[in-house]
Length: 265
Ligand code: ADP
Ligand code: MG
Image 1 (cartoon, helix red, strand yellow):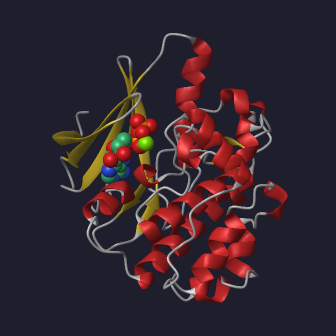
Image 2: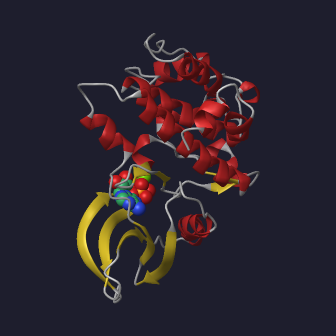
Image 3: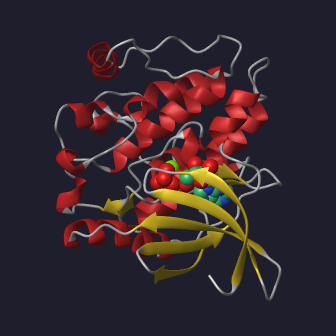
């Protein structure tokens, strides 16, 4: 960490912490995600995969990778700092009112554009949720946290290796089917719904009833004052059969709402 000086810790994660740093030469700020390296070789490869996959991405709506290095038993990933916080914080701070429809459409269009780039690179993110979607100070969406990502069609895409956040997990995963690109679409549907209502679409007091609701695709209807396009999108993204769910390509190019979304990009 000689080229960087530490500013402060900004996040505690499942494998380590995220630290805001300043480059000693340029004075630019970055985030260093410090990951404790496990002893076992297979787990080591899992942690290193995050670096490999994030470094392959280059898109205005994905956190930009700068460099990575290993020091002692830490893997350090240096990346762009998103100083607008994450969408979870944004939602929690918004308790009293609703987001305006233009913000919802803009954020959603940008997260679809970022996620489409990931899928175009034949990678699945597998942990899309409000806590892993960041904002810059000018309000641009950046998808982050590639700690669960994997390559499409790899054995890792099977449910038994999947560790997501239950609220965002698609029905096919509970059904022990492989994780696929449409499972990411389901998770983005959950994020869109949260932006519209400030609540999770699928909520329950036990795992069993949560899974039942997800597998039935049973969610409370969106408030009727929201535009038809948002109702339609949520309905399509929550199709329980992944084959019936639109891909990100479809949502952004040929879907009934694509023109509206592209006008917000
Ligand atoms: P984990 O795999 O532990 O969830 P994340 O990559 O999601 O790790 O980072 C943990 C937290 O640190 C995030 O939820 C976020 O609050 C903060 N964070 C991580 N990367 C950035 C970044 N590039 N810009 C701003 N905050 C970040
Ligand atoms: Mg995270």
